Image (tube, rainbow, N blue to C red; front, side, top):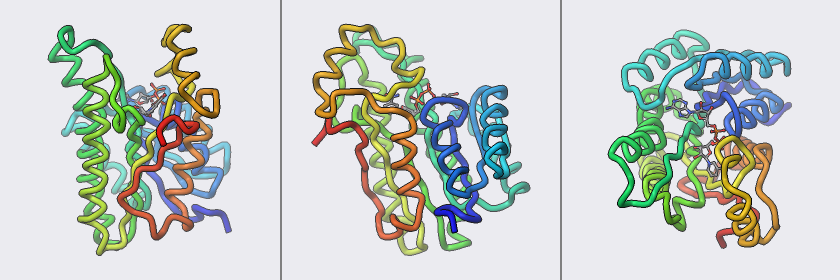
Length: 247
Ligand SMILES: NC(=O)c1ccc[n+]([C@@H]2O[C@H](COP(=O)([O-])OP(=O)(O)OC[C@H]3O[C@@H](n4cnc5c(N)ncnc54)[C@H](O)[C@@H]3O)[C@@H](O)[C@H]2O)c1
């Protein structure tokens, strides 16, 4: 039997990068996957890749920060496939800048996407988890939420808060058999980091004991662990997957 046999997972930000890797890793492990992304073409494409692995897939396009949009998508999910076992709150953005130059819009976009988006999806799906007395919630935070970063106060605040949300919900849901954990990836090769200039990349690489950026598949492997049977007794934890950068 595969690790996620008969499980249904919702992955936000599944259109590319880490979210896409998680959707495909879960599908390879036997799960059916609801692919949620901002861009319809991307979520459709990844849903197609999930189907190519022999699993069922659904594609939805929504801004996770939009309460009405999230409510509408969750209503569709609860109609078909009708049940959710695993939620991965992965959608996230950066709008970097030093504090004195940071606009209200850049602050709000990052907090609303990275933090409120996870709150909205979790709240909308929690009733089902509580009723079935099982569920896995995985929030994709970041090492930046643990150690901070100059020029990323909005992003660091959103990810630190996501860790606070994770621990609070882990306590709130534990008696119902639902686990809530966070992943804290280090620097990972995706569209999010592709724009970092070479000098900074080299400096970051020097701070990583394993001497390289992570690959999306390596973050997905940790997500699979947290979603699978081996992590049944783990809740409220932050698993760093960062080549040893934070220890
Ligand atoms: N790449 C890294 O180095 C790194 C490190 C630590 C944490 N992370 C986190 O991992 C997650 C995935 O990042 P990635 O590197 O794959 O980035 P990415 O930019 O490649 O992908 C982000 C995904 O989130 C979706 N998304 C963004 N805003 C959205 C919104 N408002 N509504 C719906 N979907 C939205 C995008 O459409 C995209 O599919 C993010 O939460 C990010 O903060 C990334």
